[in-house]
Length: 372
Length: 254
Picture 1 (cartoon, each protein chain N blue to C red):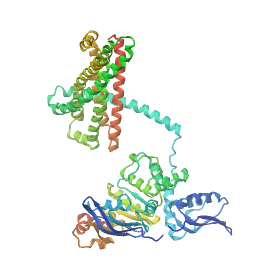
Picture 2 (picture 1 turned 120 degrees about the vertical axis):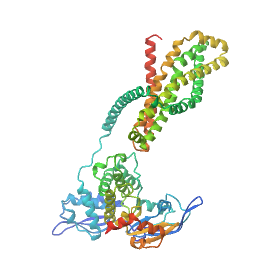
Picture 3 (picture 1 turned 180 degrees about the vertical axis):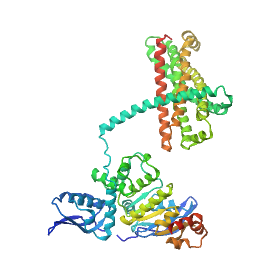
Picture 4 (picture 1 turned 90 degrees about the horizontal axis):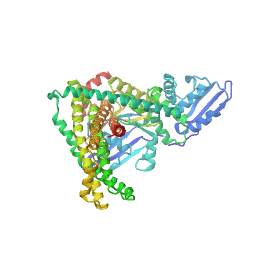
């Protein structure tokens, strides 16, 4: 590049006050140009830009600002022919759209607006979820008496994906957590010489809460996201719209099989989780606390009543419903872009885990109140 | 400032054992709109990515404004004096249109005041025919045509002398495409741009290109004004410029 010529503005005194502009009026000189323009205070009647050596859009914008300050029309600026076209285009662009650019709000207002939007969005999500639940239940009622609408193949496929494939993970994690709970209990109860109560702790925890809760949280992460991604991809490729135009009901076709599969598999998995947790606790009890195997089994029989098992298991279908519905609904919310599949998947996992834990807490309070 | 904007000598591009370009020579003259055409797989995008320094070639030399781009200084010159419009705009999705246009300014002129930067961004947004109302919007809130214009505004942010366009009219309706062609022509004339344009759009070729380069057989098959290029005896060229769609475009020109 040739040497950067310093832009300058000089006042030429004469019959009419005139500013003579020279040098490179270019983007890389805008700092100097702005400083020069700020120094120019005396009112003038004409601008002579014929000595400007280089001009680009940024320079033209500053030139027009200068002209506007002295009420000089763009056409009245003296310019060399090669710069005339550019100044005209920039002047036209500025004039064609003289609406004030939208100002961005102050930071605290944006924060406040963001909080408000989030609250409205959460409310909206809840309402949509309720609506979707209703729609799905109505569809379910229509589908059940009509075996022609059952989709056994898809249902079994989803049962395998959400249930059987998740079994090793659920069993392993429950086993480990069972062992951890036993260790925790042992540390505290040893001081009181009440090691035997570790059995009660593990059994209560897993039958009432941990078995089903662990399963639900794992499936919320594993299955809700899978449902959202599957349905979301179909949505973004307009497959859902295609189904509708053919006269097929996407809820009957996509949601019901997934919901049925999860309603069957989640309670089953929860039972396995309970067993694995008890096994983990037993291993710790037998090998580190010296509680004999028979005693452990007897203690479980003695202290645990059937109702504890039922309290745990009764929540399983509810969790299945929440996970399946949130996963499918978020899938239907996917827009046209690939980015939105990712966003919805995250949202499905967050929402389903949150709902599972909130429902579990409410259920715990409820069962305590009724004395179960 | 009289250097030829782009000079390519004996360029070789290769993916594994597949040679895309071999002994490719090309010169882009100052102030022209050069349309680059070729069947799919002839390496139009590869050529552009090589010139932009996004993909190091396996051989040959690429000079931009007289500087070889495989050295630091040449690449710097290229970044400072050229702008690129990718196919779907490639706008940063988390930034508003105005912020997108400000990104190159921020990168090249870190000392510039935020107010001036914003004003310059608004000027570019208006120059490409968008209104200031589009400035605070996110790319996802724009239509395809508006995204292209916003991408062009970002490409023009640094007042470049050289502009690279990758299929600027693909995906636009004919009216939108014609408007975009006109916009390019006006901007080229007023801002004195040199344009490297990859396109499939015959209307664009006839309407705004000064010269056409046809890519094929790993090199530039032919280069010149459209009428000369269209007269070349080559199967693909004949098919391309004299097929049914080409006749319509030619008729439209007259």
